[in-house]
Image (cartoon, rainbow, N blue to C red; front, side, top):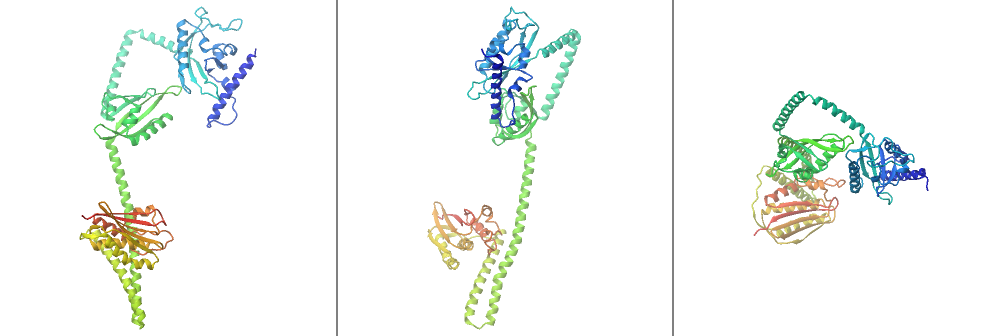
Length: 575
């Protein structure tokens, strides 16, 4: 037969291995060596470790001291067969609880027993060292009271699940309670005083309750209490009213978070409750609820957890308050502040754009004027006929450029003041686009670009011919301007009830921020390193306003910088 000390040593090593495995599975624990067996033996609480057959495989020193037994007399025995003291009904009650709880426990779960009474004999060991686990015939001693906490441990390296039993003796606490009860009984013997005190206490309680309910009703506060075990929420009528529920409605935590709370606020409410309960502090959070009438209300909830001495959450209590009026004012003020901020930013952008515009206009007007003056002066001094032809070409080109700038400035003023109008007549958009393409072809080819206008479907639209020609001209000239090399493609296609005019180039392209602001007034966009691009920053803004006047739409598309851009104008088909 193996020595008892050896068996105990092996049992302690196995328990140590299990605790070490748990430590390795939990990286949050320190990595320095830890003697789990010694720690288990030194635990201040009494502990038993059972195998899956409910047989005792380990008991610490505190348990042996508490029960007055030796480890050799416990190892291998069923927990249902030890400590059989007291009357039959007491033993059966303990056995029934152990049998039921041990069978139902799942991994990681823990359950506390009710109070158990053990009428243990004063001397529990016979001369031969065996337990006196007798029945009702065993000598009776002073009653002792225990509570048991059963916890199922997870499986480790193929072994069956282990069960830990924590045994706590509460005899002293119960004795103190009974002594207190006896003292109270003495006081209650004075009948008149007891009745008088009770009547006064009840009257005060009723008065306090009435004041409390009156205060809740006046302030529209609703009170609630959540049972974590069942998820049921007990509410006052005012609380249910705040949630838009009738007084007879049943409310649970699941229904509150999945039906009552607005979907956009549910995660925020869960997080606030979790953080408050985890830190044992109160929590408060406001969120929206939808009433059956369709109204959206803002509710403020404040709550706090109540915990048992061992840290177990027993309930959550709190209040609700309808803060819709206050929240609407707060949101309105926040929106006003945001709107004012956007207005300031827009005003600042316009001021900066205007400064840039004035500088640009000055430069753009000075360049052609300087050229005209220089060549006019040359004509006065030079008698060479070849200079006359060249000078007139330069003067004509720069004068045309000045004319376009002046036209754009005049049109922009008319648009801002609302005085620009259009004379709508049936126009063949495909034919109009072809004329503009031929006018622009020489300029594009002089820059080394291909201007492709093969896909021009004849399509009738209701438009002002001169203004629509201005739209096409600005889009094509803009594409030529921002396309250093490659090609510019112009197309017109009928698509159901709409006609689409598209101008595509393989040039500098646009980034996301530029696409959002490309149609704003005084805006000019050119990629870094591409140099300055001539223009007033009014062309695309004018195009956008002219297209709007024709009841159409325009969009800009670009895969990104260096990948070209496409502008699409869509107008209603003329029938």
